[in-house]
Length: 215
Length: 217
Image (tube, rainbow over all chains, first blue to last red; front, side, top):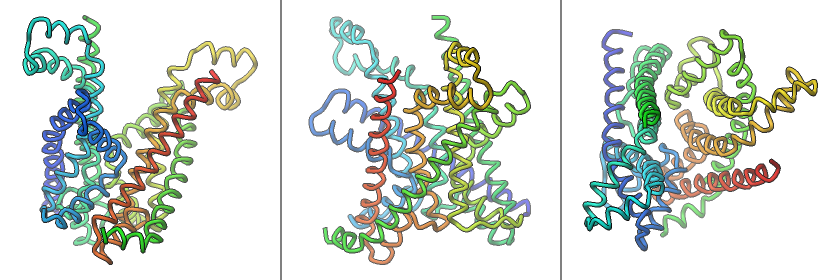
């Protein structure tokens, strides 16, 4: 393996992480929206959101990626591999985020909501000023945990032919006729990236534990 | 709708893939549960070296992406002279990977086990392997049931990754149906439905077992 090969795999790792980060940025608010639909028990939309969560939560991301990439053109939407990959990971992480947000909403103390109501706060203000800051705080550890799981499973989008870390390693292996070194390098590199996220997650959790011990 | 008719016509193919997925899931679920249970012994050991090694294995697996792990096993290891066929490589990958997760969640459940229970076991003359199998393992398994259920669903989802090494599981068969007859929507929706059915069945069974465990307590 030449220096260039290492570089191309590192480049692939960057592409995978970027795709994951975009999906996280889209999936976290999408999950919140769906959780609000479920929380407010909107007719029609609530059972739809529940069905969405149930199906996507059990759907392997490889299968979902193939479904999106190959079936969407049938209804006239053809996506390039990268947007299709982002859509896959966004839909998948949003289902898990919905459950996290919903849990936080269910545990939100009713009295506070009623207090806000008695102060004459309008619906929007009530949500933005009273509910949101607190559910962000209580969901954060679980959300970060889901983020690390997403980043770990994101090489799945390789099935769409995106040149991310897996593809980059396959290419190098095919050129040098020695698949072991590029795969070992890719595995170690990506595991280190995931490890960094897990470390961050532990720091977040420790901060929370300390804050709770003080309170 | 005619797409679904095509899939229905070739349902043998999809069902064959489904059957293989169920076999893969059953083998790796049973295997990783047994290996995970055995792994709790070094994880809870007083011997620091043993515990360190087991913990390192678990932590490594928790950071490794499964897809790259499968590729490494199937395409990388032959250069070291270790050559597996795709089925063996796939199941070994699922076993090594999920045993670590099972081991970790069973360890957490063991750590929560009341000390008195183990001490009572000692007092009745249980020790070593018999203490582990008769006194420690049953309550640990019962209290970890919901987490085991989650991990089983994870195994179902991980099994779809094996399509990349051409194991004829559900996603792989759905792909081959779609490339032969150009019915991408119907074939993948059928696959997604069968995955959902499998996971809902697992959740239901675990829920039932959990109620049984509660009653026995």
